[in-house]
Image (cartoon, rainbow, N blue to C red; front, top):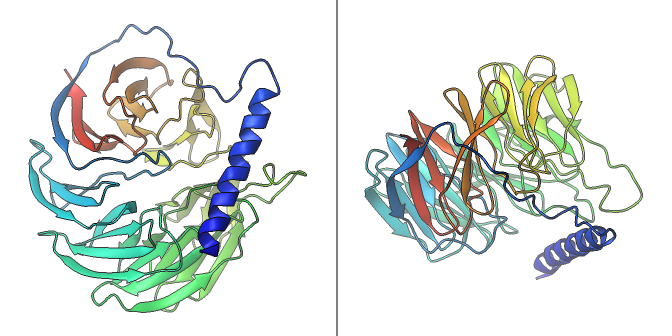
Length: 383
């Protein structure tokens, strides 16, 4: 119970501070900007729409669909996990878990893993959705597990990283990281790659652990706490590490976007940029949504910002995704925004889901797959 109370207190403190800061001026700096008039350069259409469940009222939960084994796998906050045909939206199988899902799905090695707000890891068979096992951890899970090399690894909100045997569900190891007194409600999804597990933590550090033993290989401070208030000292690494070749790209709130050498944790470059959204790689550029909902393209070789789109300020944008010559993001009102990949110009938008969309868009061929807070899954394409 103490863990739940501490989490609630941290959220209330952050909310109170934001309200006070917003009321200190006549203009509320945390109010989302209204949408500007836009003449669409092209129109889009919804190819199909499928209901997965009742959705979620918790806008901090980002259950993003994933594509594997020629299926879309999606988890709904109300407890449903489903596999969907990407061609027509037909549900291939659906499983009701009777619990609130907070993180996932993650799909690999023919299994589907999700985490729950009740502090459980649940693993299903990817072929038919039958439950293989479920295990308890020490606190709620609100980020996607990692699956690979015979392991399932989860990070819970109390900064504990736990590894399980993917087949049996037996716990293999546990790492406990020291938490700051105040953190964001968000977590970095761990990544399994090259016999290791990479994860960010709320103290501003990125760490790599050996997958078979949990032994720490190296850790790197992405952003160190500065300032006088607890709000100013927030440095959570809530971004899923992005691995490309020998580099790891990661970012922190109130801090830096950093390129790191995967073998030893040495920084290659750093760029001051605050975000808690996933980073997307599109050829030679990184696509990033700032914490204030500006969207930037960054040269992955040196961290130089190539362009920034500021017209969607404070609209609680999703992470960006690249599709052809465009970049797509969604917002809290359920709009799908299309930007030019070349210079970030807004080129089109369409209202998709009135309950809002925070899940990362999923691109399959020429289709954008969106999952709304309503529990509806959509496929959208240019006309």
